[in-house]
Length: 132
Image (cartoon, rainbow, N blue to C red; front, top):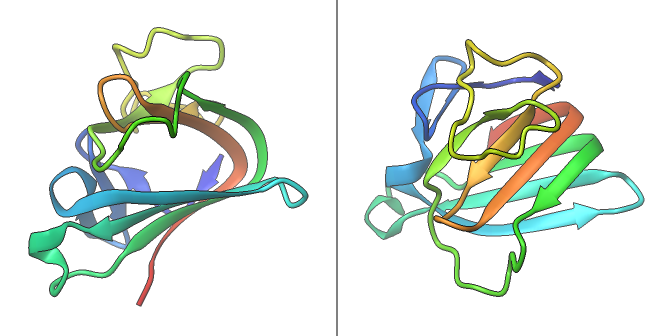
């Protein structure tokens, strides 16, 4: 997966030298899936105490080739993100996630949104952007 970002700590995104702390500063907002375009967007909004300081952000995945949601995803309230990492295709043990340094272009990006909710995705391209 070609990306314009890197993972920092287990809940940080690094883009252009700027660290975005998704766990402490942002809340999960929504996802949009465009089936015909094979694309996915995952949106995060600043948490209440950061709303005047930072902009909302989103991930955009184009040309999806793998997408998995945890069973019952969307049937429970989800507000934050616990961890982001990588998983090798076929590896279903989500207790251990790979770091940026351990991952390859073929590994799936894994978003742990709560103890039981997750999004697992792989695409040709992945972008991380601020909404200004």
